Each structure stands twice: as structure tokens, then as C-alpha cells.
Image (spheres, each protein chain N blue to C red):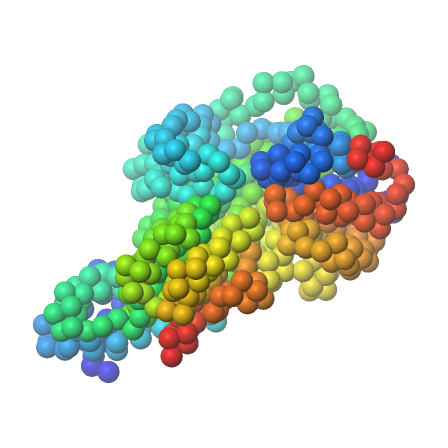
Length: 211
Length: 375
């Protein structure tokens, strides 16, 4: 790895937002391609953040400051990536299901997916099945990430999957689910394609669903 | 035995006639939903424990000095959005909440964002010497509080070292503050602890006899704690230790802490600091009271831990879970009830069935107040 990319990587891992932005700019100025900076520094660093999170080395604060540093770098890279016609690895529609206003888990998932070079369409909270269907039609996303915190809103995950079926879109998108009251078994029962216990595992799941 | 004696005997692993039968409470939507399924119209949150024949409500056993913000902020409606509304709460946070169903509100703005806002709005509201911290009827109730033979269980409020900060700043801001301004984070935690400590000390010095202390944190989610154990040890543990030490010096040896979510990584640290009772033990896909007892022994006291999913599921599963928990109930140090407030997706007749199983196996059907529904 180029020394400047290592510096970008380290700044993200340590959650140093300002340094990450400076180092990404230095990497661009040094003529390193935006795709290389993205893959070898930003995505690689966030993958390491995910690994450290799964191993209990990192917790939510460490994940948040790393994601913030990554986003500072990504902001500089984005125009370059568009110019170079670099595609994301997948497009994910994310939202908490109808009736659920709680978005902490969903936001963490979005941050980690963005750090893995996914494009995110964040529909926010309290999203009706119809809105998810419209978003799939309008964005051409290949994954939907549904979040629920409450046992009473979990059934709206199934309602969303049923709405996708009714609209003839179920085969066009993979559906992943997560949230405190969920279990892998519940995900199976409602016909989801996968369940992730946390934001880091959501990245691995999204990748596996698209592989 | 009266309720208080039974609770204390249970939590001290002493002989008692039976286990207390209680619950944490019900979602606002639950009782109306159950009224469509046969619950009498007159049942409310206030009297539900009587209707269901429970010993008492844990929610109603707190009486102490106010350890939180004094005065609170003005509650005000910021924006009406039809089914939802944005309001400013008494803790200064602005939240979007549903008007039609119970859900955890989404924080959309905070008054506490940095050191100037801390010093202007919050720090002055955490003055332990503010006379408004005493309940208006404190003097009149002191004889009752001092009576070692009173029948009622009374818990002193122990406040919060992290949970309130999370509410006041939002989860993301409090998380990044740990790194962006660690001195501010430490000062805020210390101020909260100082305020709690001083209020608890005043109450105990007055001769009030407390049976337990109740603290609130809510600093975990399904994947674990919101603060790393490293930071927990550095910033929070010294204060838990001194508050627990103060309580212990006055004979208060049951300190229960309310923390939802997966508490596995923090539980041993709380125990080490003297916080010895966990509540409401959300089960999720991680927890199990039997596992915790095997892991931590009798030093860990537990309240809650009955999986809400099971209550909503088939009745066979309810009986199976009541039976599975029975040996632990018989051992003591554990009072089971729903692992959070009972949600409305639990059918009324399932809840009655759960209570009948609980009364039979944990209550031994002796000495329980008559349940209205079983007459």
C-alpha cells in the first residue's frame, strides 16, 4: 500500500475526521486514482472497523467516529468517482418499517454499508410498504434493508415483503432485516433473504446477497 | 409475610412463603387492546396490578429526593404533523413522537451540544442543594420512611450517569463527545454522580430506611453496549463505586439498574462496582436468567427476564418457560416478569394464562391477593 493510502486508512481507523480529509486530498493530488483510494483506503479501513467491532475491540463510538472520518474522505472522492464513472457495489434502500420511529440501528447500518462502497437510499423512519415499493421502482436498488425495534412493528416487515410480491418486485430485490427483537428464524418465517445482528454483519450479509 | 418482607427475603435468598408476583407494566396501547378482548373498562395502569392479583407495582415503590434536572425545561409542542408531533421534553430534547401508537420517540434536536450549552442550560440544573429536590410532602412522610417495620417496599432513586446524557445529547453526539471532548464528557458524568450522591446522602442522613436503590441507564442495544467497556471503566465505574459504597454504608444492599438491550459486556463491571441487580433483563437472542446465574452466581440479583416473544406465542411455550424458570425462582434472588413492559401483541388470554401458571408455580397459590379475573 502507498504510504499516503496507509495514512488515510489509519486516520479512518482512528476516527480522525480532519486528517482523513487532508490525506484523501493529498492522495488525489499525488495522482492516485479515486477508485484506488476508495477501495484500498476507505473501504479497507471500514472493513477493519467492522472486524474490530465484531471482535469487541470497537463499540458504537469508535464506529461512529470512523464512519465520520470515512465520510469526510468520501465527500472529496465522490465527484471524482462520478467523473470516472465508478459504480457502487450495490444500491441499498434502508428504512425503519411503518410505525417505528427508532433509527439508531438503521443509521449505523447505513454508515457501514456506505463505508463498504454501497450506495444508500435512506428512506428514514416510519416507512410504509408502499413507500418501499415506490423506492424500488424509482431507484432500481438491488437490496432493501428493513429495521424494526418493536415487536409490534415487526409484522410490517412481512407486510413490506408482501407488498413487494404484490408489485411483482420481490425477485428484483434482496430483503435483509435487523433490529433488537428480531431473530434469524423470524427473518426466515417472513420470507426475508437474510438477518443481520449488527451493522458490521449487515455489510457481510449485503455482500453475500449480491454475490 | 407482607410484600416488603417477601421481596427482601427473595432478594436475600432467605426463606419466604412464595415468590412475589409482579410486572413492569404495560404499553399504553396494551390495556385498550385487551379491553377489546375482555379486560374490564375500569382497569387502568394505576390499578392493573390489583386487577391481576399482583403483589404491587415496581413503578410505584420509588420515593426519594429528585436527582435529575431541577427545574426541568418547559414542555412544549414544536410542530404538529398529524399522526406525529415534535415536542420539547422536560429534559430539553426535541423528539418526534407518534400520536397514534406507542413507540420510542426519535430524537430530532438537543439543547445540549457542547460545553457552552452544558454550562448554560444543564449544569445549573444539577445543583444538589436546590431545595426543590425534596418532594413537597417529605417532612410529613419521614416518619413512615424511618419506620423499619413499614409494609411498603421503598426504593431510593439513584439517577443515571450515562443514560440521561444520551437522552440530552442524542446517542451520536454523546458517543462522539467521548472522543471530541473527553474532559466535557468526564465533567458531565461527574456532575451527575455528584448530584446523585449528595441527594442520596441527604435522604439517608435523614434517617429514611430504604430497601433498595433504583438506577436507570439504557446504555445498550441488541449488539451490546453503547459505550466501550474501556470508557465505562474509566469514566463511570469510579462513580458507581462511590454511590454503591454510600448506599452500602447505610445498609442498602440491593441496587437495581434498569438497562435495556444486550448488557453482557457491562454486567460484570456493574457487579464489580457494587451494582448488583439487573432489570428488566431483556432476553432478545442473547440473554437468559439461568445462564446469568450460572455465570455470576448468587451475587447477581435479577428482576424481569421473561421473554415477551414467548408471551405472544403459543400457550404451551408460556407454560414451558414458566417451568424452565421455576428452579431459579425457587433458589431466590430472582423475580421474573415480562422483560419489558407488556406489549399489545400479547393476547389478553395469553397474559392471563401466563399469570395463572406463574401463580401456580412461583406463587404456590398461597397468600396471593385474589385476582379479579380469577374470581
